[in-house]
Length: 30
Length: 470
Image (cartoon, rainbow over all chains, first blue to last red; front, top):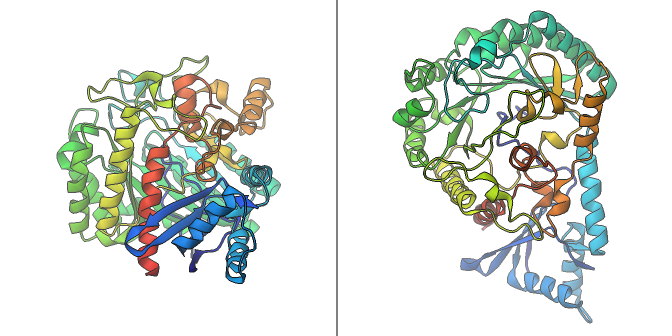
């Protein structure tokens, strides 16, 4: 029985995007 | 305990593994098939006398959201998450439309450059821009976010440079004074983009510029001509070359059935450019066309209807499948979704950063602290409603109009996902594009369903992830 965690569960998820109108460039993390 | 409604499962057949993802917690696991089978046994009525190994596995699955106490608890967790998105104060997000004028004449554009449109299209004045700055400062003080994301959009935002410079400069000062981080994006057709503009904006938190190329050279020139009909591809690419070493560039593209086959050539062209490896994102999406729903007080709203091969709109047929379990989209949507999946794979194959096609929402319209400011100072929940005064949710002057207040409350109550039944994609979709729902049916609480596209995307994501952990 193997379980490899790729990403732990969290309430902080990637922001949703607006693919229709805005589609912003990714925010610079610096 | 029972499996969560938001579990997704993709078999990685070559390895007898299974990719598991929970869209509510974003947990992602690669498990052996017996773990997936154990989830099925839990679903069927529980495990009797589980082994220590099974107990350990069940605990881990529960910790990551794959097992939940009950269906009611699962739905409550979804409601809590979406309420958190709505009230999120981690950023103030403002899209400012410097003008609705445009120097292009794209046939598919909702704002259009058709007839005498540009003669009457609104342009923000410096005086309105200063009032917009004052409003944003008040919002910074009221919401107290650690980050301001300011996006300039239009029309073509570079047709009103004085307002863009003025707002960026003033908001940079305002955020610096408050210890707030600021990132600026520009969404432009790229025709007027220059080093001078980038250098002028760089000190004010310029994060990235998104430029649209609609296919290879010939196709782009057909779809995105100047008002006089001249092609624009060469000039735009020249401009990208001039600025690519100075700021982050994202490439977008809008395709329909007549143009989609030219995109692989565009991708290859981009790959061969010296700026190719500097692109921060490459992401293409389908063009939707529609006759706008007529509402009082507006110029017309964003058309989001899919087109058939004859380029005629398919009216409302595309949203009929939304509902219990999410269903599937109409034939035309399915074709465009399949094309989008194909282009995403091509984009990834050539090594460009792109969206994964799974994490699509909830978008800005569901966020209380995301706003679009129209050229006249009216506030909207997203650019898709610009010009529909009846759907303005406020004004930079903080004037209290009953109709704006009513629209604001209407948007705050939005919950199209409630019609999506037990669809596992709700946390990463939230019922789809609200502007699309409104433009088609006049009902923004009806979901727009692109489950087929998301199902393809989760398979691709699963194989990428499984490959990376092999």
